[in-house]
Length: 167
Image (cartoon, rainbow, N blue to C red):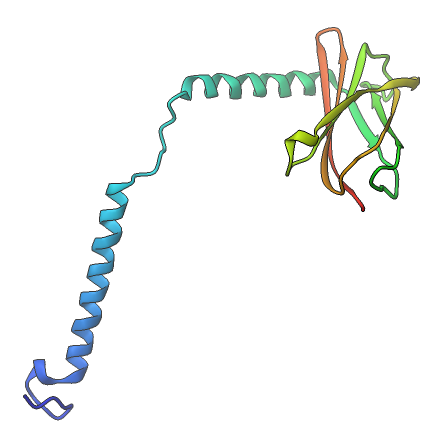
């Protein structure tokens, strides 16, 4: 067998052999991927789809209800946050006319995304018209998600913010 570029027989030409090998590898890889796709299909169907759908609809209703309230809020955090240092966090919550609200309860929730065992909460105390404060100490450095939940009767307003606690 004489393999060279000058050979006029197709199966002895290295370019033709290279193209055939490439085609064979390409088709084999595609066949393998098709086999794997049918062997382990993605789990696009949830077993509890109805419950998840109801929870999603409930969340949408709560967001719409919160928007209709016309409340707005801001969380004031210390400029330099440190571990194991008690600092004051203040939430200012106002109504439709930018007037401070008198609320039944305001809670401060701190969630650590990487370790839920470190999560904690505290009640916020009124310090003025629409102003609520609490003193909090974080025991670990890193990212924390802060959620302020304000309630008046059946009305609820949620304010969220991610903060960074320095070592």
